[in-house]
Image (tube, rainbow, N blue to C red):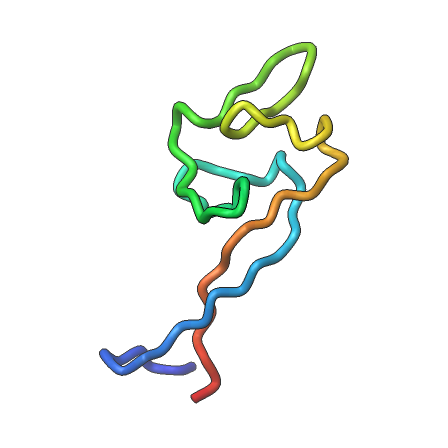
Length: 74
């Protein structure tokens, strides 16, 4: 197990995930900008399904780009 210190460096990794896996507090790339998803940004409509920032990502067929922080190998 690696101990975290003040000198720990992180690398942002962007992975493609399904829109249904996005939760409040996640960081996603939306329209070219990194955005933090808030409670009011996620909507669930009975006809259109889940939307983030008003975008349904082609009804779940288009992946969402989610930002992960991983510890760098330094």
